[in-house]
Amino acid sequence: MTHTILVLNGPNLNLLGTRQPEIYGHSTLADVEENCRALGAELGLEIECRQSNHEGVLVDWIQEARLSHTGIMINPGAYSHTSIAILDALNNFEGPVAEIHISDIHKREAFRHHSYVSHRADEIVIGKGVEGYSIGLRALHARLS
Ligand code: CA2
Image (cartoon, rainbow, N blue to C red; front, side, top):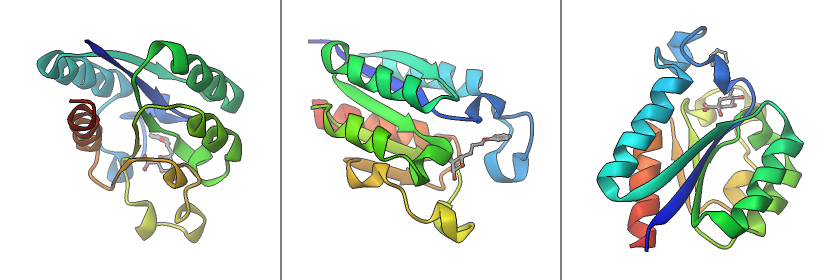
């Protein structure tokens, strides 16, 4: 059985590589997504990457993934710290969920220290830069194998 992983990036992550490189590095979102696809091919996973700046769109995609994907890797961006709606949607997804944060949210402003998504995530990768996406993908692969 081929496992299909939905890789979701939330608000402002489309700006990766264009500003604040001291926090988020120099890779663009296209680089990150390409790396995920390459690693997915190596691991035998089918990868689908999407990004949205809109909470409801992310909720819709998570709901739809119940029928089409076996795992979700998500960097919810700032919605991590505010969105019970995204948490509720993930709670209705049966497969493993990996939460990724490029920066170390625990070493930043206090309002970034709590993540609602962490209440559901099976794997949490924080502060490893964009390498965190590879770590998260490998962790999902291990859980699905
Ligand atoms: O560290 C992470 O991955 C975050 O999820 C990134 C979010 C932030 O709100 C979270 O607290 C932590 C923000 C993403 C914004 O990304 C940008 C990248 C380059 C330029 C501007 C924004």
